[in-house]
Structures are given as structure tokens and as C-alpha cells.
Image 1 (cartoon, rainbow, N blue to C red):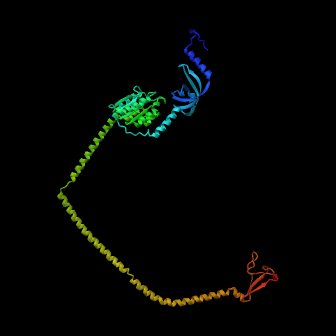
Image 2: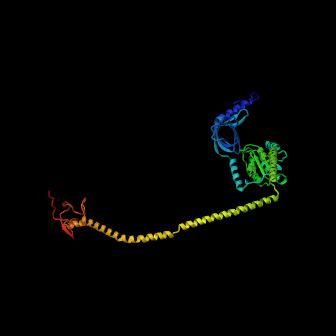
Image 3: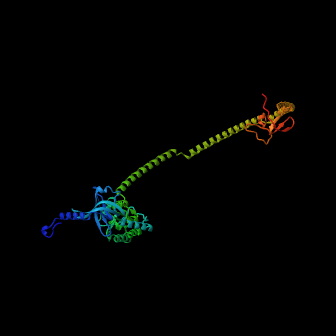
Length: 455
């Protein structure tokens, strides 16, 4: 430690900050701290700088590029995070800060959570449903913004460039801090009540979530919703979206973009009008030329009525002559067709065929009467011959010559491979009942004994 009991032992500021830095780093070491991110920035160097805060205090933080490259996603203002950091001091400015080694998300920041709840509440009330028609361009625009802010200068510069005759009235207000909300609400009310404006523009430049928080006030959003004048809002940068912008009739990403949306480019309109004038002149000239051409054509076709009537009479006489000729020719043709059809009909008369068929029938009837008995006699003779041939081969004739057929009685089942007719003695068994069919009648016999065939 330094000895500072007298002015002679005074130390430099550099020595003081170096000693304080050493005490902080040695005394506290590495800690886990939880808080909400605010004022996050990442310049080209790749290092990240932000403020970690809670309801009562805040501390600056530095996350160097070697550690920042391992982040899964880039932190945003309002994020609630936990950081593992070493307490240090930036000697050049004497600022107490945290050197962050690791960063974890700890949930949505309180401000963003409150903003989300307000957004849902106002959406349910219909505050974000404004659709008032904007004049294009506005005759008299009321600009509600800071009188010293860059946003006002951007609006004025763009408006003068695009629409020099525009009439702007500035309603100066605070755009951040505790007085911002009441001043913004009063400005909206005064413009609706006392001014002859036909549109309002509420705008300010970019900033952190805290800087823009006044434009997330629910009372301001409702004042914009109830305004009789259409409202355009351009708050912060394009990535910032406030409740005031959602309640407005038109949201612009930047103040300059709002002025461009409200006022057309006069020079572009002049060029467009010039081009339209030239197109109109060319179209008019072409139409006049076409009309003159049609007039010349009509004049060349114009004829005296007497000549036209004579022409029509001649045409009528010619058509009458042609009609009479065509009728005569048609009648002659139809008469020829009728004569031809009459001749064909006479030639195709069925009377001759009927007479011819009658003659054929009279001639064939006696032949049929003569041929039928002969055919029956021949068929009877063939039938008798067939019956004789059938009797010659009938087994019943064989039985009449003294032969018999030996069969098993119907209830007995023959052995496998045997049939009902007995052809050999070995097919029977002693005591078996057999049926013998003779030329006339049957005999029932019982097998007493089997005899082997003689050699």
C-alpha cells in the first residue's frame, strides 16, 4: 500500500488506478453476476460492450472478441443474463468494470416482459387497428419531436428536397426521460384541438431500450389511437418497434423514411408529368392522323344516292332472275328424282316374288308328300338293323345259351382290388353268399368249398 500521510508522498492518478485495479482483481476474483443488458454494442473490433443493471445499480461490462466468438446468439438490450466475470478497473478512465469470461441467458428482461404484456393488452383493446387515410402529400404536417434532435433535421432536409412547398409545424417535446410521456400526449392533444394540421409525424432518432421507453407508454399509444388526425410514427432504427408505432396509422423505419413516405419527389413527378405530356401529345397526333385517314377513305367511297339506288335496282333484278332460274332447276331436279324412285319402286315390287314363291311351293308340296313315307321306311329299317346288332352282342343272349354271372350279394364289400362280379374261385370265401344270374331269374348260393384250377 502507498503511504499518503503527507502531501510530499502524493501519488499519481495512474498509480492510484493501478493500485485500485489490483485490489479489485485480487480481492474479489471471479464471480457470477445476474442482471439485464442495456446499451449493447459491438464495434468492428469484435469486442462487445454493454451495461449490466438491476433496479438499483448498474456496471459496465466488456466481453472481448476471443470470448464473444463462442456466443450462440448475439445478446440484445433487455436480455436478462448471468455472466462469469472478473472485477477490474479501466485505468485510462478510472471506470470500474467487469471483464466477462462467459455469458448465459437468464430469461427475458423485465422491461421486455412488461412491454410484451402491454402489447398484448393494447392489441386486445384494438389500439393497433388504426387505418385512417393519410393525405398524400399532407397540406400541413405537425412534427412532434425534439427541437434539437437529428431526427427533426433529417425530416426537414428530406422534405425540402422532395417537396419544397411543404408546410411543417414543429411541436417540440422531450423524447426521453420522465417528462417525455406527458409532453408527447399533450402535443398530440393540442395538434388535434388547436392546429390546422391534416397529419402528424411522431419521431426521434435511435437509442437504447431505455432511451425509447417513453414511446412504449400505454397512455401515449391510446392517445395516438384516439387522434382524429392520421399519425405516422418513426421511432429509432428499423429494428426498433414501439407501441406508439403499432398504434399509428403508418410506421416508418427511420425519420427520413417517414418524410419520403409522406411527400413524393417533386422532381420525379415533374419528369413523370413531362413524359406523360409527351406521350399524350404523340397519342393525340396519332389519333388525329388516323381520323384524317379515315375521313379521306370515307370521302373516296362517298357516292350520289341516285347512282346507289340504280345499282341496288340492277342488283335486285339480277337476284330475281337468278332466283327464278334456281327454282326451275330445283323443280326439274326434284321431278327427275321422283321419276327415278317410282321406277325403282316398281322394279322392287314384291308381287312377282310372291307369285314365283307360290309356284315353287305348289311344285315342292307333292315331292314332300312322296318323299316322307320313303324316308320313314328307310329310318325304320336302319333302326331294326341296329336293334339286331345290339341283341347279337347283348350279354343276356350269352346267358340264354347256358352261361351265368356270379356276383357278390349287394351288402357284402369286396376286398381291395376286387369287383362285384366273381371271375375266379380265389375271389370268394367259404360261407360267403353269392348271387348267380341265369338267362331267366337268379339263384342265391353259399360257398362251401373252393377248388384250385386244374393244371
